[in-house]
Image (tube, rainbow, N blue to C red; front, top):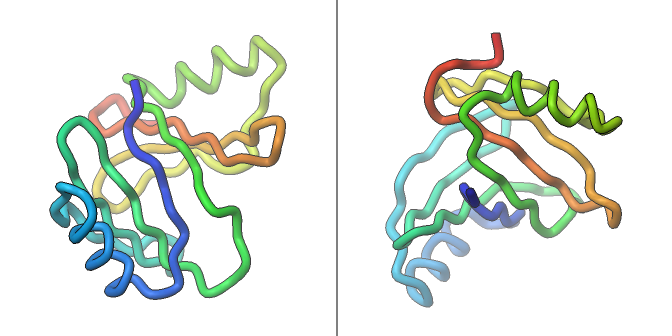
Length: 118
């Protein structure tokens, strides 16, 4: 199931105001991870993650909810697919892992409930 779409932005305030203006979203959760500011905007049935990036980076990533990051890693390992980053435990208790798609797109699997990556 789709969890969120991430958008890399240069100005968090400007971007959050823009998306709150054009979409029916509200700020949900703000956190800092690996010295990067993140802001989740919640809409009806979707979320947008704004990621502050002062550098040239991929424009978007897509994230899917899973019940266990560890199980997803093992499943994909059986298929010969390995993570490019993670797994990580985020400050809010979520766990996540990243993969690369065929055109260098970022694909994230995220668990927002326990069990975690352990």
